[in-house]
Length: 102
Image (cartoon, rainbow, N blue to C red; front, side, top):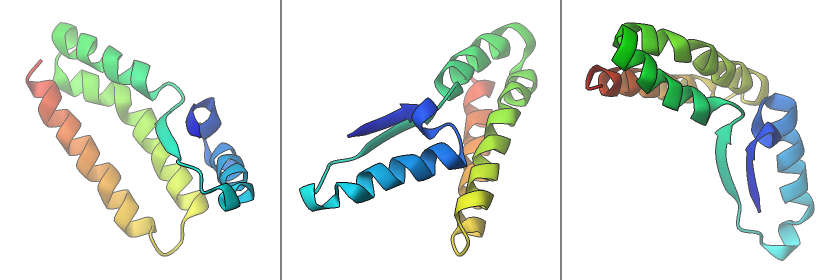
């Protein structure tokens, strides 16, 4: 089973995907989850922006996507919220470093 794009675009969509997997758990499905809706395109666009306007502008372009990830974390997780928010922060930093190379 593969979920990506609009099927994982937010908390409700992710809950629905989880329900689908849960209902088929007896079949022991293999589950692949790709990027949330719009994130892959935003990553590609951020490289174009970095080349044209610099890495700070490019990272700023991605901020709404990081914020969406954090909203989903806050909506779906309790115990793991701090750790997952730290992971988003690490990804933000790593992407900032990569965009410096553009």
